[in-house]
Length: 481
Length: 100
Image (cartoon, rainbow over all chains, first blue to last red; front, side, top):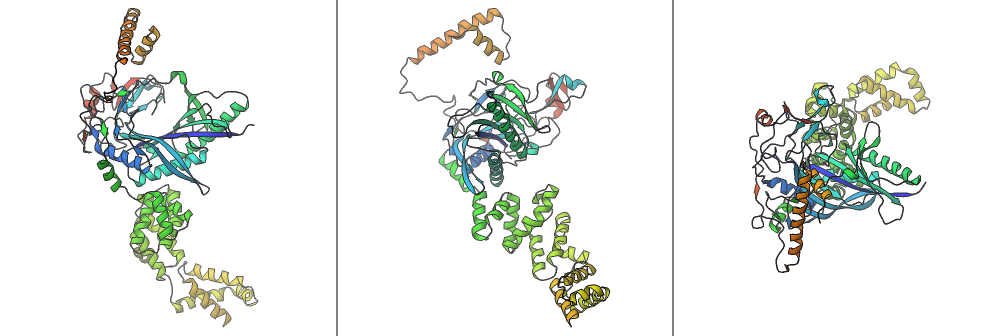
C-alpha cells in the first residue's frame, strides 16, 4: 500500500444571528410554523427591492477580521443562477469575484504543534429554504414540500485553503472556528439546527508530492464527528482506489452517517453552470476605514487571547486554559465568578471537574442550567469556612445545577451542615469503636488500614457530614488513649 | 462563434423550451452580438476606469436590523399554484441536489 498525504479544504456556512433577514425585515427565528417568516422580498415576488441589513454586513466583517482576513475595499453582490425549489427567485444572492474578505488564516494546535490554516475567502449570501421529501406512501411520493422561513437568513461562507492534512486537523479547525464565531457573537453555530454547516473537499497525493490529486466533495456532514468520520472513510476509500491502480473520480458524495460510508450524489458532468452576474438591485459596498475601525473597536476578547490571559493571570495550565476557553459561556462564567471573589484555580477546578461532567452527561451548556457564578462563589466560601466538606459540596453542586437554589438554602434544607461539634463526633466515634471490636483489635495490633474503615463508618453514621480532620483526630484519641 | 449546442445548453439552463427554428435564429443573433463585442474590444479604453457595477455612484445603501411584519401563512401560500398548507408544494425533486 502506498503512503498518501490527504489534502483537505473545508467550506463552512454559518447563519448570522441577526434579528431579521439579510435583504428584508422578516424575523430569523428558528423552529417557527412553516412559511410564517416570509414576505414578498424573500419569496422572490416580482418588483420587490432587496436592501442589505447593516447588522449582517457588520457581523460578516467582524468574522472576517477575527479570521485575520484582508477586507476588500470594494465588494459587491452577484446572482448565482440555478433552478431548485428551495430558492424562490431561481437565483441566490451571493458574492463571486469581489467577496467581502480574502487571505486570512486560523490557527490550530495538534499535539502541542501550532499550524495556520489559510482562509481563502469570507463572503455574504442568503440562505435557501428547506425541502421535505418524506416518502409517506401518499402524495408526498410525487411532491416535495417547501418551507421558505429560512430563505434569506444571512449566511457567511468561509472557505479554507486546502491546508488541512488529516481528519483531526479538520475537527480542530471546525472547533476553533465555531469558538471564534461564538465569542464574537455573530452566529449560534448550532449544527443540529443547521446554523453551522460544513462541506469538505478531499484528495490524496503521494507523500512529498506538490501536485494535487483528484478530489471528491463531501456533503451531508451534520456534526463535527460526521466530518471526522467521513474524511477518515474517504482517505481509506481513495487509498484503496489508488492502490489498485484505479483513478479517483471527481464527484460529489453524501455521507451516510448510519452506514458510515460515502455515497455517490452527482457526477461532475451534472455540475451546475451558475452564470454569475452582478446583482443590479443592490448597491456596491465600499468598506471604509471608518467602518472597519468601528468594528475593530467592538471586537471582544478572542479565544486565543483569553487562553493566554488565563495562563498569565490566573496561573492555569495550558490544558486547563484550552478546555475552559473552548466554550465562551463556560469561560464567561469563570470570569464572572472570579470578579465576584472566587479563587480562580478552585473555580476552574470545579468547572472542569464536576460541573463539566454533569453538563456533558446532560448534553447541556452551562447557560442551560440555573447555576449562577454567584452561587458557585457562595459554595466555595462555604467550603473555605468549613461549613461543608468538599465531599458534601458535590451534593450541593448537583442540587444547585438542577434547581438553581443557593448553596446556603440547600445546606439548610437538606441538613448538610458539616458536623464540627467535638462532643457530638466523640459520641459517634465511641459507638463505632464499640460496634467494631475486631477492627479495633486489628488497628491496635498494628494494621494502620483499619483506621480508614473506622473513619468510613463514622462518615456513614453522619451521612458524610462529619468534619474529616476532626474524625481522624478523635478516633486516634479514643483508640490510642 | 455560437453554435446550436451552446444555444440549447443556455436554453436548458434557463428552462426555456426552444423550437428548431428558434435555435437557428438565436444562434445567428447571439453570434452577431458577440461579434459586435469583439469589435468593441478594438477600442482603446485605457483611460476609462472599468465599470464594476451599474450603480457606481451609489454605495452602501442599507437598512437597520428591524423587523417588519411578515405575510400571513395564508396570504403567502395563496399566491402559489398548488399550496399544501403549511407548505408550498412542488413536483418531487431529488434530495441534496444543490450546493448549500
